[in-house]
Image 1 (cartoon, one colour):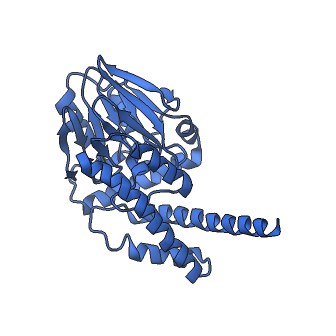
Image 2 (cartoon, rainbow, N blue to C red; image 1 turned 135 degrees about the vertical axis):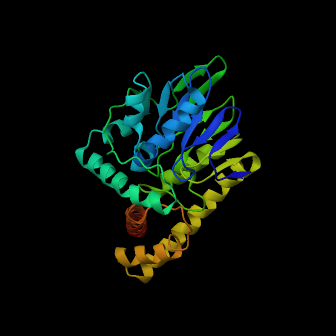
Image 3 (cartoon, rainbow, N blue to C red; image 1 turned 30 degrees about the vertical axis):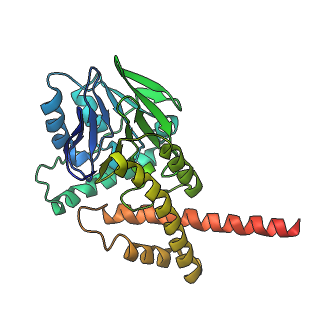
Amino acid sequence: MRINRTGMVSNEFYVLGHAAAPVYLLNGPAPVLFDAGFTSLARVYEREIRKILDPRSPVYLLLTHTHWDHIGSAAYFKSLWPNMRIACSSQGQKILTRPGAIEQIKALNREAIAVLKTWGVNEVFKGQFESFNPDLVLDPGQRIKVGPNLSIQAIPTPGHTWDSSSYWVPERKILVAAEAAGCDGVCEFLVDYDAYRNSLEVISRLDVEILCTGHNLVLTGSDAREYIRQSLDHGTEYVDMVERFLREEEGDIDRTIARVKAAEWDLKPLPKQPERAYIMNTKARVNTLLERMKKQVRLRNEEEIT
């Protein structure tokens, strides 16, 4: 099944806020939030979390990565539930100490206010993103006990970003992968395509029954497993397309980005990623592939010499 709405997915597991910028909630003895979406959706998330949990509080907020649209309401949540522990990878912790990264996260969350209006969202929080310090830095493979028979394992899944982590709930066969699993046909590597592909192969070996992507889509059963396999194919197709554009445009980054955008973003209906954020991400992908192509040429030349 393909689910593109908010609400309960299965057995006290929920999509909250907005399907395009979700917060996931695993209810239980120690309730867990996954990701913190947009700052401008903070009060929507709050209302829906309280509806399920009150008078209890979330015990953990687990961040898949530190992009603006996954951590926007983290500090807001912490102000509501001070005992909640925010967790991320060690790389994510480092990013959150960088003033330049924080300023960019603030700017993109401000711009999202206007985007929400185009999505038809009326309950918009206009407060600014606030920086925060993680309470817990997760080691690769670390497990967190959240109930008598319920645990969550942090799985490093770099490629989209270096700090990307997926969260595996083995007892429920739930995988919160965000962009590590692609995003409804979009190849989501930013920093390293080969690492991204390797991460997909890692999660493809899990017996996933519920797959949570970063935006717009939750999949269940055989659809979840097939989606991961298709993401591997989408990656190959995307790389072939971008490399062809780069060759045809003689390495011109801006012209290549324009062609990728026309083939991908322009055709998508709303709600979709804000344009500036999409262009930033596409620029990162194109640059990553250009450097990869150059490296492959250097390696071939070295092989010919030897």
